[in-house]
Image (cartoon, rainbow, N blue to C red):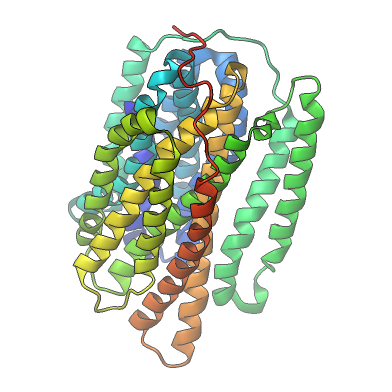
Length: 461
């Protein structure tokens, strides 16, 4: 869990570090956001194969592979001479991160009794929700004294320690097997998710590139077609139990609905985490440290409430937490839609705290309710599906929020509006769209039920 917190914390450190990186390397916001989008997209491509890796390598082998890749990517990013090498380092980091999260969730479902899963999943919620929120604060604190390379320099010794700790203490808690990886399925995931995120990002880049840009609807369309082929391939291979990702998990209603809510929540969370620091620094005059400190209280709230929400889940079930949680997320993002250059920092802080409180009440019930209805042999597939959806939705949210903000702000600048006013207006439109979509999850939250397996225990080590 400590290692997972470290690798996920790293995922959002680029949000505050992006403006100084853009200045030093001479890149645009729509290009720079690929430092985050490429990270999440890589995770989305690798995660479907993690069931194979965990089964083949075992708990210990998968952990050591994950932390070795993450450490190597962090070192490469720290010494990167240019944008291309920096993105490569982020991709290598992401490959390690992709293995870590399904490994953590699968291990918990294996060794923790069902009646305690809410409590333990609350700690996983701390990793999933609080770590990304604390990333910008860490980044802001490090940027001013050490520069953007220091963001990676601070993480590197921690990841080295985690790797050494794994060598000393991690042991296998599940049996290994000889499942084979389906290369065609893996190739289809690359094209499907790559096309979807490239197309979304292209909507924003097109505002700058004009007629020379690739029509973003081409990669979007290709992504959708190949996603359909991927689904067809998995359904065909399920007959011989050789699918890369077993989609029979979607036969459970709890799982289907939870995935829907999770998709929108991750889209809203990562879109907000990327756009808000850009607005605070470029339009409202905040320093990187001030920007990081503004989102610190919300991150701390999510961290402290994770285990508490887990205990509440064990007592009252998912719906009493999910319904108010989705309402708070919707209100928090809706408040951010009214930002302008003169907005009080306390207004921004309050909106972000509401958003964070809502997210803390959403993630733990979703994880527990979605995985709790599955059979033990489906845990690794369900965990991989959840983590894949999280990363694709996060990448799509990042690209979509940036695209909406860019298109709107560029249009306003052409009419004579100041750059600061245009940027906050563009961001406000992006937050407004996010709040509108998030509002749909309030009704979906009413459909989630407590898993009937609560109280059962399928065994572990």
